[in-house]
Image 1 (tube, helix red, strand yellow):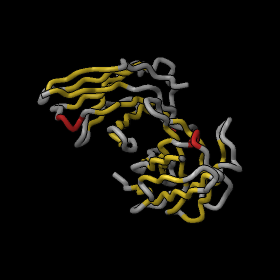
Image 2 (cartoon, chains in turn orange, brown; image 1 turned 90 degrees about the vertical axis):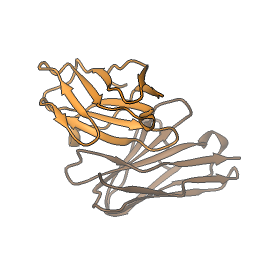
Image 3 (tube, one colour; image 1 turned 30 degrees about the vertical axis):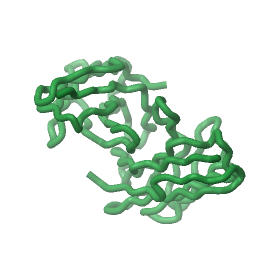
Length: 110
Length: 115
């Protein structure tokens, strides 16, 4: 079973920031927080990952709390094409497998 | 990010026949490839993990004689669904990871429908 907890769904207005929370209270010290998203009928797309520092790339920002028990994925200016299921996964790399939970279904509305 | 392709993107077959799905890493060498299955309105479930040149490791409940996996090169893995039945109809997705096996990059998926 997945070890992370995410809200089942969220709405966001087009052009606004989408903030997707994730709880990973049992994350161990060598596990990263990974975010993927899956647009309907497609394979998952890698977004970003981090260990304890905040990370930013061309797609999103990842904010990890100091105790590492939770994180927030931020899409700064959501578009309709960002509508997807977003998965937060704690993953130790070579020491484990990606375990997908139910994710958060983000609906970006015009 | 790295690009992973799958072929075919969709396939319809008769019950009892076998279907082969290919997964290729296009711009990197994938020492490890993974095969997932996703039923409608459910999340991805890992079926098996394969390392180049060695036998695949199957997850509990996945029949290795039914889902044959070959990972003969660093850029190609194949999944063969043997003697397919309607309950094997699903969305099959592969992913690939490099030597560090940290970030997995996913293919676009293959929709299998068994009549």
